[in-house]
Image (cartoon, rainbow, N blue to C red; front, side, top):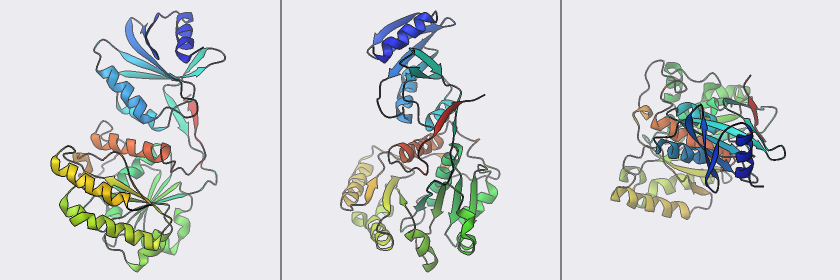
Amino acid sequence: MKSIQLVKQYLEISGLEAELTAASRLLTKVNGQKYLVETNDWKTKPVNLSVIQSFYHSLLNSSDLAGGLYITNKGFTETVKYFINANRKKEIVLGLLDNVKAKVNWLYPLDYAVNNDSLPQVKIGLFICKGGVGKTTTAVHLATILADLGYSIALVDEDPEAHLKRISRSASLNSKINCFSAHEVEHDESLIKNHNYVIYDYPPSLQTSNIYSLSELDYCLIPVNLSPMCLGLDAEILQKTFNYISQINPLASLLVLINNEIEPYHPVSNSLRRELQKTIKNTSKAHLIPFSIKNSQHLHYWGKGLSFSGLGKNSIAYQNFLALGDYLLNTLKIHPRKSFEMTLKN
């Protein structure tokens, strides 16, 4: 029996009306309010952020729906929890379907327990041969999202101007994030040892002292702005960046992220994007992340006591970086641990 039929049967046994409206959708009423019910029959992978985002927007587009029930037999990626907590205009309740017992175990609110036991550490660097593209801002936002998901993060400031260290002193970062200077790590590597992720923030011009950590990276995240000043003639700045990293660390994967995008559909943006894609295509280890970080005031303001965990979870910036975290963890499998456990909160 298909999942949608099992869910319909379960709801009716529970005393709820269940009207089949599509191949995988039902309508039901809970306490007199109408809810959309959707099931997912994926065989091998958990439901990811983009699926729940699409479901949420379908709820927003229907004024007579109070919320939705999303049910699968394979679980949910950890970023789903944070999207639901940040978007409360319509309620979403998650469920795990037991196909054998034809029963739904409701999982909202839900929690994720991170297993940190002796698993490989992931090292990510932020670098491009140009200043002012948002390397430091991207490093802090990405660290915040990963820390919110339960990971421990070491931020390492490789820039002599120490922007990252100054931000860490003025902003209220998640308690799972520790920030160190390159000098501190050089003298005591144990400082970064017990962290799931190490994120390095590099200056646009590398010094001899940066070479060792760059050679140790698993991934290099390369933020670019879609502007002639950033890409240069025929994307020469990007090509220079690729060549530089590949000479030092030929094993690192190069992940290009379009950052602070203002007009994604402007003719100039389209032309620069094509130039960007052409350059990336000619570099075997390079990969364009298939979405951008949109322009937002939260990308630029570093006020005293600013907490990214507590500020702006409805903001464009938080939502974009949540999607980036989901993409890195669940599409590219940039993962320091084998699996996560999904448990109900007590």
